[in-house]
Structure formats: C-alpha cells, structure tokens
Image 1 (cartoon, helix red, strand yellow):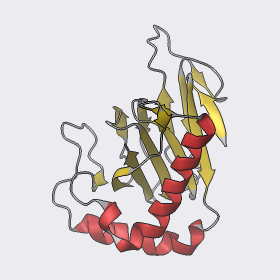
Image 2: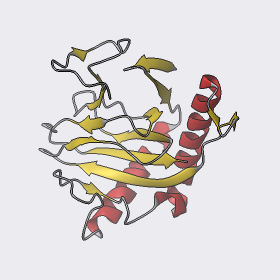
Image 3: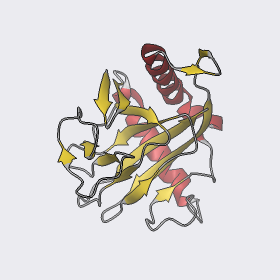
Image 4: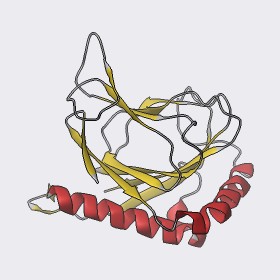
Length: 193
C-alpha cells in the first residue's frame, strides 16, 4: 500500500509471517539490549534502549529473514513510485539496521535519518501503544494534526501494529509519542542508501 503523507509517499506493508518469529526476535532483542552499556543516538533527549551504532542487525543471522522481507518491501516501494537515482531506477541497499526497545514513559523526539529511505517495523506492541508521528517539512505557524494521511502539511500518525512496516524518505521528520502502557514496544529500523 502506498499512501500520500505530507506531500511524501509513505509505504505500508504487512508481514503475513510476523507471528512466526515475533517471540524469538523479541527475546533476542531483549538479550542484546541487556548487554548494551550505551545506546546509540548522540545528543538525544530520549533515553530509549537501542542498538544504533552499537549492534548492526544486518550481520545477525536471526534477523536475516525479517530484514530480507523489509528489504523486499523497500524495493517494491521504490519500484512502485518509479524512484530514480542518478538517472537510473533506484534499488535500495541496506545501510544499517537496529532495534529500539521502549518501556513505560519512553519516547523519541522528532528526528530524521541520513539515508535515501528508512523503514520502521513494529515487532512488539499493541494498537494502544505509543504511535509514530510524521510531520511535514513545511513550516506551519499553527500545525494541524490529521487522522487521514492525504494533506500536504501538518502532522499524521500511525498506530503500533505488530507486523506492520512503514517505509519513507529518510529526511522526513518522525517521532514516537510518550509510551504510557506497561508492556514493551519494540521496533526494528533500517536505513537504505
């Protein structure tokens, strides 16, 4: 599915095999996060546990099936949009992959990535969990929030749905609202060049 969002196109894919490896990858993320002394993300206000710049999931065999599926979703997104890079069809290549573990009261401030495309995969969480927000790069004096992702400015969000993958241009500002539920919210993020 490709949806218009803030004058950008947001790809949304659903992984039919999600529940085959949700439990194993959740356990693996928690095991890895317990070994991380300093989470990635220089100068971040948010103090979530993540493996950015510490552990690259693309070298971890347990993540290979999921990362392959995410990669295929990103390639389909690029193909469907007719993306070109240097006058040739753009074929995304995974540059880096990491996990984010959110506990109660965690959040992630607005940020962007140094990549052509990025994706967020909801590994664990629920519809009642913290939402991912995207905001227009167009400045607004009075930003408006939209439930429907068809307007060119303002803020839109996506609910946390395990098995859902969002694909977007890396320069698009995005954030995670403060988590108020007790259960864990775990996402897998990938940058593509």
